[in-house]
Structure formats: structure tokens, C-alpha cells
Length: 303
Image (cartoon, rainbow, N blue to C red; front, side, top):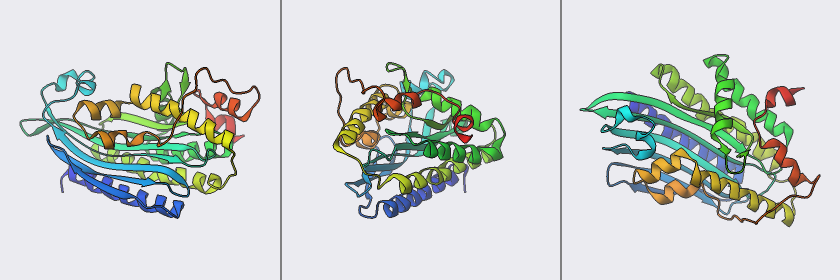
């Protein structure tokens, strides 16, 4: 089996496992699959769960796509690969819960190869996971980052700090001067050793459920009112802003002629904007602002 086939097999299995666990956590709705092909090369399977007891919408997609020319979002960053053909495989998910006390979450794991004359000239892994709460709970934040730190430990003492910092920097909404949430892990262009780097990709992919499912169990039945629901919809607007303005995966997918429905499945089913909104001082909604900046969560919350 080739290296790329091994990655593909892991990713399709990961999509299956996450779908099964999320269906069990929701208890009502099921994922529906939309298999698709891409004219230039490759295809994928997009799975969407809608109107569940826990998840208003949960989307998880697998893609294996290829092309003959890198899109602008990639060729600008890697000009030495101009003119190379490419192939990218990955799994990406975004889950939008119904309950405002249960955070939105995102995860992605991917592998990219560039070729000339049938020979690989560059390859790398990328991915990570992050959490976007509306009403943060310190115990959840601490659990999320402890899980991230634990899965990073076999790969060196510096791995968690480096990829946690990268996550804070990447998921920063510059025009709002705030992070998208409380972070997690983010990495790209990992290409030191295929075996070790692939093992880390698997650790991140498998670790996502360890990080998220306990939070689902703890928060899915928390009572909420219509004001909290409206605040959730308002804050979802920030998610839309980031994904459409800054997200590299969205830009790469659209610029490479990807399938728009699959690329934009990350957007919430309901969202609202409000001009000049300011939460009441001292309110639970105002409290969120203190969480939307880079912080050393393990040091601050572990004590």
C-alpha cells in the first residue's frame, strides 16, 4: 500500500467513526451522505446531520481531489510549486449544536502532495481542532486543552505550545480583534518524517472525540432561554465572517474549483447580525469577551 493510500484509508475510517459517535450522542438524527465527483479529478463524500436533538447541523466531509495547477491561495505561499500537479486528501468537520451552552467545534486533518512528471516534489500534513463556546465553562476549556496537550506529548515537549499558539494566531478575526474561540491545535506544512508526522495526524484525528464528547455529555441538556439562543445566533455571525474572509481551506476549495456545497457546509443553518451590539456590563454574554484572546489556559485554570 502506498503512503497516500494509507492516509486515505485512515481518513475514510475516521469519518465513519466520528459519524457513528455523533449519531449516538445526538440520539435522534442520522447523517445523510452526498457522494460527489470532481471534473478535474477526484471526489468525496459529504455527510450532513440536520435537526437533531443535540445538533442543529453537523457536517463532516471526506475529499480526495487532484488538479494540474495550484490555486492562488496555495501557489502564492509556495511559488516553487508553480506548474506542479497536486492531490489533496482530508477530513473536515464543523458541528453546530442546538443548545447555546454546548460549543460549536471544528476539526480538520489533511495530506497534500505536489508532483512533477509522476514524482513527488513536496508533501505535508496539516490539521487541528478548535472550540467556539458562547457561554464558556472553565472545566470544559481545561479538559479541551488537557486533551490536546496529552495527545501532543509523544511528539515532543514543545509540540503542544507551538501548535496551541499557531491555533490562536490562525483563528484570529483581525477585523474584530478577537479569537474565534478558545483555540486548541493547528498545524500546517508538517513534513519532517512521514511515519512520525502521519502518527501525529492520527493522534489529532482520534483525539478530537476524546476532547469533544465529554463536553457534549456535560452541556447538551443545560436549560437555556430565548435570549441565550439569540446570542448564540449573533455569535455564529463571527464564525461566518472568519470562514468567508480568512479560512485557507475555504479559499483553496473555492479557488480550485471545488464543490461549493461541501466547502460551505461549515456555515451554520441559522445566524444573525446586529449593528453595534454590546452586551450588558457584567452579563454572561459580556463574560465571553475575556475568553476571546490568547491565554495560557492550562496554567490559568489548572490551579
